[in-house]
Image: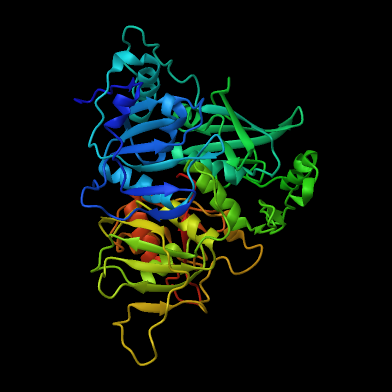
Length: 524
């Protein structure tokens, strides 16, 4: 396509018939539905067939389904059939999207939709048929590229973003939305620098500042009108007239991620701000002393509670443009495309342990580039999957999906499986075993910046830099907190940060001090 995007709308059954045989793997209602393989079934393709769309769906909503997985290069809307075809920039991005939506229900306007591979390798469409669709995709492509869309006859040029600050209003707010939930959702689109939350006209609102106005534009384009939870907590997003936010305190109402040294001020007022919600059907969660959710928040009539980790999982799922299916999901993940010469049960325990309490790890005997990881519950598994799928580890891009297994079996006593299976159920290193732990509020995607805590007294910056350099990475920046018991360290890539966390979390620095390492939302 020579770098250009062409988008069209086709009507009539004769145009649709050319696509009728498409499907190999289907994502539907969160279940793992696989049709029996036929000899003529197509392999994975970067073109995806989306069915059962709502009648009034817009091009933007369909494109947004693919945004978190990579560049969207083409779209074909079949509005009379409630279907669409979406072309992604790479086949790998399409595979990741199908795998993700196999595990978690894709939804558009609160209705489940079906996503499957097309038997075509690319979309060839007539852009003259639908200039609206072309304009939408060009705008999205320009935002993703960080450039301005080209101006052509009949196409309205997307105005440059006026500000890096977004004003966010939450409509239909049946459940509390915290500053950390907003940070997790919006950080999918770029570096979130500052957030201020407040109540105005009996509505919960927030001001959120990105490092770049282009990131703000992409977040607005993708998230405006979307629900954080099923059928409620709708995001209404506009650009703010402000171009910079002045944050005085780091607490549960405001946060400056560029200045971790700010005082906390009076953070207890968050309870008062949410009092306007009342307690409909007992749905409103009470706040723990740490500012997180208690386990009393129920998101379904079945009465299943929502822990702080579930809230983070819901936020991560919302950032992935899907509704969270929640309870009843297996706590076992399948990680594949691993570096079989480097990966060990211990390294997977440490990495996945950032997002949940890993119980068991089994590297597959006959396929040592794959492993099963069992977490404490399905919410932890979904959280780990949403953050770790597609991350590069030991030189290879890891794929993470939900497994059909309900548990990871241990080898029979006396059978040596080359130490490929390990039981971590009694490990003292679980981050989320203690109720109300601050770890619940510090769950962030892999990033170049790592947060260090429990630093031994007297250990200097140069010694810490050397430790992290020896892990195989390059230290780009370092900053001690005031008491020198905590610090931030920035590596040159996310892959290097992941490797450093795997090697140095729980590192014995002597004097009964074991270093604690986690991903940070801050920048140095």
